[in-house]
Image (cartoon, rainbow, N blue to C red; front, top):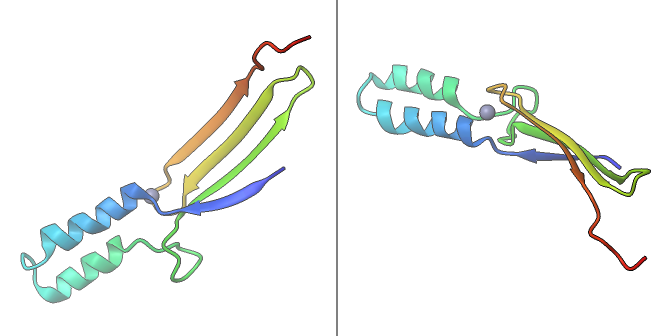
Amino acid sequence: MSADDWYECPFCKERERKVREEQYGKVPYEKFKVLLAEAAVEHPEYEGQSETIRCDYEQFLDENGNWRFKGGMECALCGREWDADVTIKPKVGRG
Ligand SMILES: [Zn+2]
């Protein structure tokens, strides 16, 4: 089983927010517009999409009865990555 999810990147959003709050009124407006455009959080391949983190994962029950979860996420803008490889053993049952 596989799934793709998209998320907004908090690190990229913070970078955009900082430019908006720290540069506005402190640099010439034309320069501000350039800085803001450079910091804008938009997926480089999907125009207008602010979700830049793609998440792919799979989960399954392995042959030993363990629940396995494997997944990864990557931000297309800042390049941050997250990896998960989790094995969850079952609790003791009745037999
Ligand atoms: Zn990012």
